[in-house]
Length: 313
Image 1 (cartoon, rainbow, N blue to C red):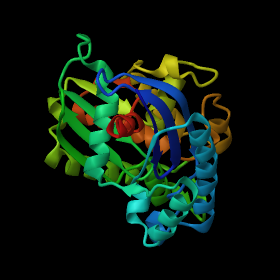
Image 2: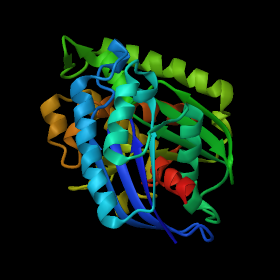
Image 3: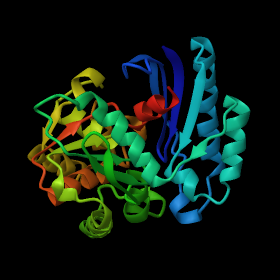
């Protein structure tokens, strides 16, 4: 067994997994799994730079994670950074801060690498289960981008496109510094057109219609699942491998995009950091399901973070 720590720093959230990994059997035992909403990608789409306040929120989470890693005695640490830090002109400032706090350099991976780790983390548990037909299409809806990867035992094709929940919200739903309350039909139509164009790009590389099982990852998907399941509080065990039908996803998406900030904030399982971006994230999920003809999405709590942990072990 090897005790490893994996950090996934995305556009909207930063997550930590400390686990004991068995390199021979492929088993992982979670010791600590946590997430903080830091919005590292705040305004990156507009300014091209990581905002000072976004960097400080991220570094505060890193300091918390460094303490957990020390307490649990992880032997190996890997820090993977995704879309926002790929795009930013001042990303060296981000790299320096992470090295000072955690002692490891963040790896700013490509979208294709991001998709590969997501596929590994999401599908390793599905192998050998007859009711999850192959090939799988794994979609990881992040803050800045969405990764698509199709495959069976291994990833066969992958593509990353810029339709994350934060990016779509900031690009289409924000006016005068505020998210539409609720968004206008015109704003939603523009967002739909942007997502549709990105799906066309993804389809150039990934055969979206070939998959037999759609697997959805990350906070937008798990939040939609929690709402569909009627949870009063977030319950990972109930959400993991739940199967949410397209009619439920469509109803929830319509509800989120027609509601005010206060109405969304009143949803018990909705994390405060997702109140203004969940509508865009739900719409991305819905349009993917419509495009691939999926009647349901299998929701996975295991994703890129688990794939990073496997790679360390």
